[in-house]
Image (cartoon, helix red, strand yellow):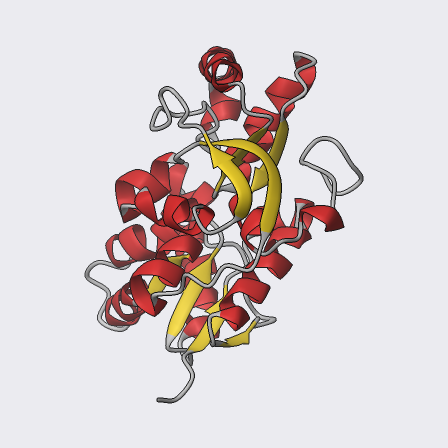
Amino acid sequence: MSQRKVALFVTCLVDLFRPTVGFAALKLLEQAGCDVSVPGAQTCCGQPAFNSGDRSNAQKVARGLIEAFEPFDYVVAPSGSCAGMIRKHYPELFAGDDIWEARATALAGKTWELTSFLTDVVGFDAVDASYDGSVSYHDSCSGLRELGVKSQPRKLLDKVAGLNLTELPGAEVCCGFGGTFCVKYADISNAIVADKTEDILATGADTLLAGDLGCLMNMAGKLSREGRPVKVRHVAEVLADMTGDVAPISQGPES
């Protein structure tokens, strides 16, 4: 069987704030036997514009992304939010367009969130990693509700030597980030994330994991402002055994 040709969709936040997540995703995909490329022409998925009602600019950005990713068998992102934008909203964004609707729908059908792709498509479980600590896991809204990502990261984390997972109360409840929501409704967002940090502390776990960097940065920022000692990381960093390469989010130079 030929190798799966996979395009890694790095995403804006990973590229700008946490490149280690991209390298971790690349390592995991290669460990799973994929032929991975990182198209240089990739840009934002257009979600901020789409969520703000600016369909014209969202379409402009999306066209470039579609063209960049069309040659590949699969597109994989370490983000349920960005993968969900392509998979669930690109066909809607181009509905009725004689040329672009079919192209958007084709891309949507081959776009996956990282942990879902590894478990549901590849059947990968040969995680070669260890983590000495207890963790809790937050289920990000888009990954959970749009893509059905729930059991997949937990299946992979179960293979990490030394890791103890304590389920987070209200793990499926929004952290208050919501992309532009946290800017438009800052007070409401802060109240939501304050409730989330209380739930995180209640687990007694020393590390919080999730699969979306926006959510992680939001929760890490609140924990830091509260002076809480909880470490915050993207799940890919733990699965790829790369926690020694970079400090936790909001606690180091790449934060």
